Length: 163
Image (cartoon, rainbow, N blue to C red; front, side, top):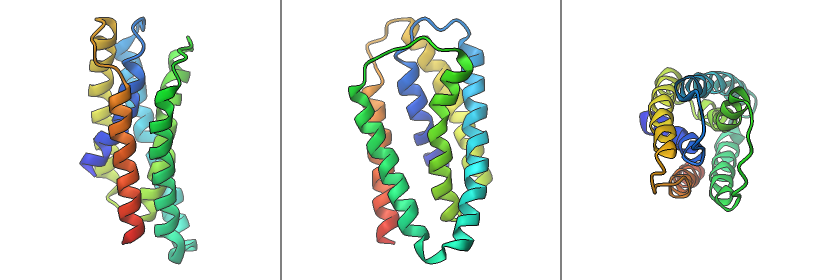
């Protein structure tokens, strides 16, 4: 769960590395971390409910969700358009995928609190660091992190499907 929380933070890091002109880096990082904990709470609840309803389909559905999200992360590395949007919408956009991933984790009955705290802490720390790196024109950009997160989610999805 701690490692998965780290993986969930990487998509926000990859996005925030592309934004050199963010003025409120601390508040954006904090808000994104809160949303990275809020959406999984909802996702876990729905995933747990879905587990009760669709017990025999749980592994297949969660595998498909994880695989699809991982694939979406990898494919998003081709989109280079940077749009100026409010901090709330930016953090919301960076955090929405945690909902669908947490539905899968709720269906797998993983430890909810450990994942949520891990995702929040990793997201805050790594988002704040990546926003500072983006401002300093650091050569590290978001594509490798999106690939790592995407491949990790695809691997977890395939592993879940096999189990």
